[in-house]
Image (cartoon, rainbow, N blue to C red):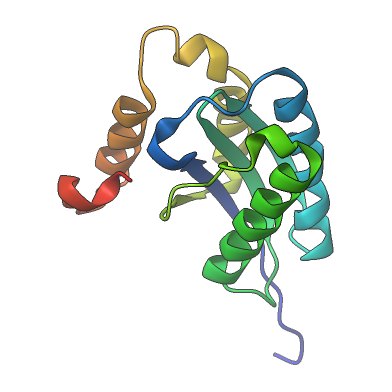
Length: 150
């Protein structure tokens, strides 16, 4: 085959360090737009970005030219610096060290979008840790609880 083709959907989840509730109001809305721009610049177009006060969900199509690790590092480093520069009162802002990246089949993109869109509803009854554990279990990811949270 002469041409390399790929379409890989990724549901990315990461939280603020210590689940500190930094992502409120104006910060949240502008952060979503900023993350969309970063992904566009990485040729990994976003499908949906949403968050609650302490974590972010991003559904995007991974560029065949970038490793997931590189995309996540660039998203987190760039957005962390941007938050601190834009809102000096948030100079202590940090993302957690890790992340969760989960594959989404073409047939499940719609349900992933609905899930991400309904974050506020989900978190009326569930913490970030509970939600993240459910993802790890659903995707059968082996993990050590001591090293998941920071």
